[in-house]
Length: 181
Image (cartoon, rainbow, N blue to C red; front, side):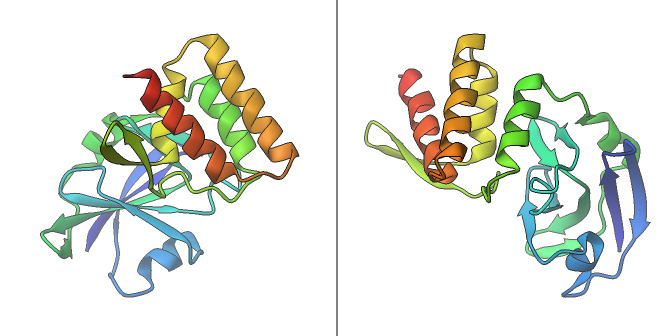
């Protein structure tokens, strides 16, 4: 099966051939903790959930934050298939320039067991929203410098007191949602 691999440490996108088996993604990352996302239309993007704690390189695929290597395969309905996006097109969607806020936050988050893509629920009025840490970082990156400094200071305090980082992120997400009302 035709797949694409992204290697941010060398800023490379390669077309590769893989045989899709039950352990293919685990073998690719040498890890059993794999995140799967459909951030790319008609494709699945697999990433190593350990990449954050291992301080791997961060980058953006479109507007989506990814940490570490990625494996991209096609998805046709419920079936996995050849990747149909050309490697060159995929490479054009990648931005390796990570803003300082992201770099600072990811360095702090690497000391925790938080997952960037695990969804949690917040509310806006009567509406329940499923968001994740990646969305929270995106929202706070768009904020003013004072708000970013507050976010970083509170995250540092959360880590120093061994409080729940996931709960802190959920709380900050709720604050971001409330500020948009």
